[in-house]
Picture 1 (tube, one colour):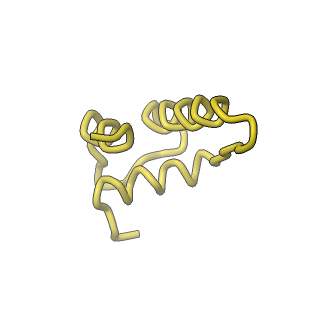
Picture 2 (tube, one colour):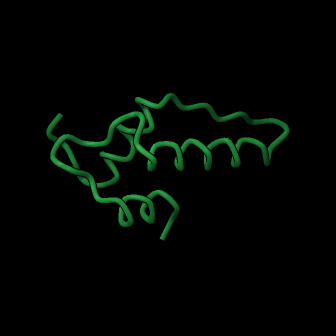
Length: 64
């Protein structure tokens, strides 16, 4: 199971989706920053809104 799957399994998406201020979004952004810091050539960036959408899509939500 990859990290994204683990996050959405631990915190299922509600009917209103994830909010950019949700703890799960912060955890995903911290993981992205960690992955970015492991490479001298590549930098990853993600906004809070984009992180929430990625999480919702990973949870199977398609109704937005």
